[in-house]
Amino acid sequence: MTLTKSLLLTTLLTCAWGVSAQEYQAGDLHIEHPWSREMPTNAPTAAAYFVVHNQGTSADRLLGADTPAAGKAELHEHVHKDGLMKMQQVQAVDIPAGGEAAFASMGYHVMLFNLTQQLRDGERFPLTLHFEKAGDVKVEVAVQKEAPAEHKHEQQN
Image (tube, rainbow, N blue to C red; front, side, top):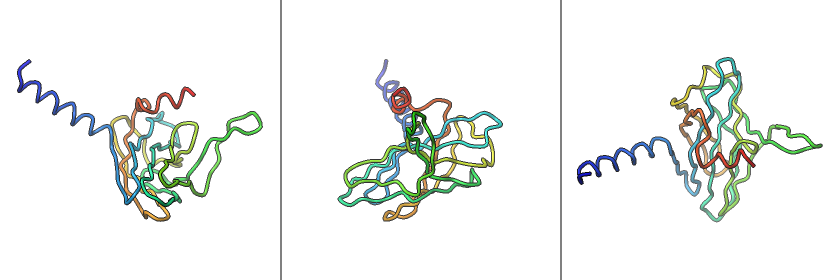
């Protein structure tokens, strides 16, 4: 392979990786790869997932979210209670100083109700995250058929 072809291939792979791995910075908060799974045509709900890393020395809290892609967005978590897995709404999610909060399948997630249209693989939609200290942070959520590679192990646990 010539040097030119090698450089072109490296550039294309870097661009493709950049498209799939979105990251956002808001003060000390680093938000990694917001994504949602493609849902069946008649599904009225979906969920958004991401990881918030707090690189600062003081905690912050995610207070809520909203998006034009859904009539309502709520913070939810899965909990194991009385031998069953249940989903419940939470009012806020703490992001500890120097720590992280993972929004993943079977854990915290942003539940999207009354979708305005079917979320299709390859599309993106805006989501605004409301933090107590960092304020509003706008991200783009990538719709995917499958969980990203870094999230697949979380689903198997």
